[in-house]
Image 1 (tube, rainbow, N blue to C red):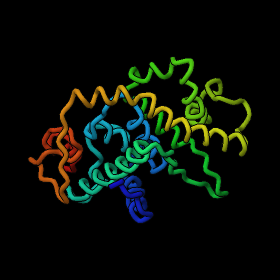
Image 2 (image 1 turned 180 degrees about the vertical axis):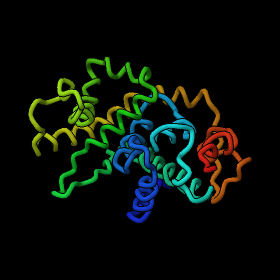
Image 3 (image 1 turned 90 degrees about the horizontal axis):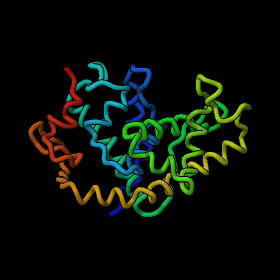
Length: 233
C-alpha cells in the first residue's frame, strides 16, 4: 500500500513544530521538503540521528523550549519520517515529486527555500554528489536547483543572473527542478541498491517508542542512541 499524501492538517502541525525552532538556520516546511528530497535522491543513506539536527539549525539537540515533552519530540520525528516516506514512495513509483512551495503575498511561489534545502541535503555528503556534479551528460539536472538556490546569494558574482528572474523564467526553472529530482533519483538508483545490500535494517512500527526499543528510523540502534538523542533537558 502506497504511503498516503500528508493531509493539510498534518502539514500545518509540521509547520507549527518547525516554527518553534529559533535558530536562523532552522528550516521551514518548503526547505524541509527540498532537504528530504535530496537525501532520498542521493547515493548515500543518512540516518535521522544525523540529519535531524540540520533541520533545526545544527547542534545535537533542539533548544529546550522547542518541545514541551518527549512525546512532542517523538511526534515531530514521526511527522518528518512520514513525510520522508511519502516523498520516497512517490519517487520509487516513477512519479514526479511536486514540491511544497510557499507563496508570498502576491501568490508567487519563488522556490528559493526548496532549492536551498536541496543543496543543504547535498552538502551533508558533498563528495558523494561529485559524480553527478561533474557528469557532463547528466549534471545539467542540477542547474535549475542551483540557480534558484543562489538567486539571492550575498555575493552578486555568485548569482545565476544579473537581472531579477521574471515569472516565465521562474516557471521554467521550477519545472526543470521537478524534472531534475526524478532524474537525479534514477541516476543514483544503482548506488543506493548497492548500499542497501551492504546494510541490514530493522523497521518497527509502533505508536510509541521506548528509549531502549529499536529506533523506528531503521538504523538498528536503540532509540535513545539514535533519534532519541533529540530530547529536551
